[in-house]
Structures are given as C-alpha cells and as structure tokens.
Image (cartoon, rainbow, N blue to C red; front, side, top):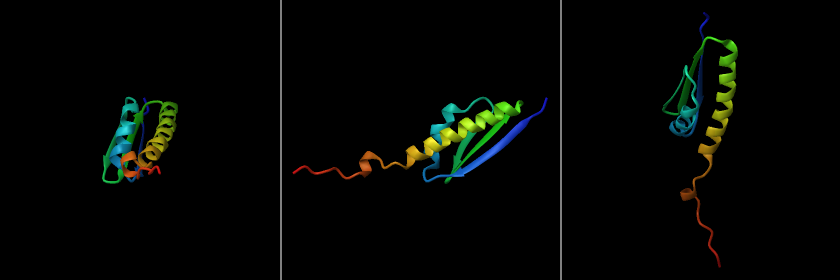
Length: 83
C-alpha cells in the first residue's frame, strides 16, 4: 500500500488561534500545531484522492480561520458616543 504525506506551513499574526480553530476539523492522519507565528499541518494517508480532498478542505478552513483571527475584537474597538 502506498503512503502519501504532505506538510503545510503558513505564517499568521495569531498562529495559536488559527491552529486551535483548525484542529477540530483534522481527520485521522492529520496533525496541526502552532510554533511562534507558524501553523504546521502534516497530512498522511494511503489514497492520493483522499489526501488531495483533505488538503482542499484544509486550505478553505485555513483561509476562514486566518480571516476571523485578524478581525478587530470588540474590546479593541472604541465605543461610539451618542450625543
């Protein structure tokens, strides 16, 4: 049986939050970790099509996780003053 594996490393402003957001969606054979400003995911499997589908799903989830962790938080915004 053939073993297929890949490593994806990306850089983020809040890497721990991105990794935490991605981890629940990891399938068997996937691990996601944060180290400094980097998120690293290892994907392993025996079916190339399954690994490609997992990478595709992962990249979509990664884009969403990164986008949501870069939005300003409510506590960081100044409240509007009503006159």
